[in-house]
Length: 73
Image (cartoon, rainbow, N blue to C red; front, top):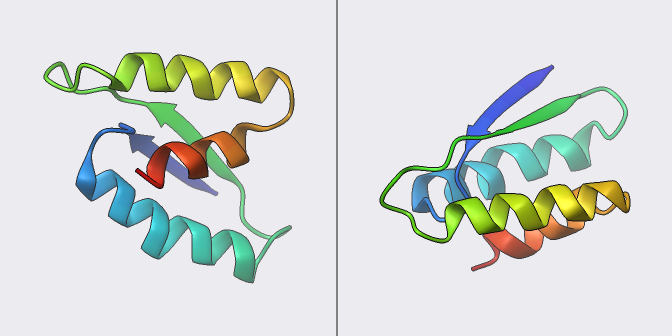
């Protein structure tokens, strides 16, 4: 299990997601559980709305797609 504290506006979080989380999900689609916890930094003014958008997508079963889109920048 991987617990990721992240902020959609953070360049380091984006890099971690692309270089660690995405490859893990692809390599072990059923063997790795990723729990995403929103940790918006106060000086990232769009991090909270991005997190809300991701959670709205989660209601529709599309969290991963939205998360990838938000990190694509």
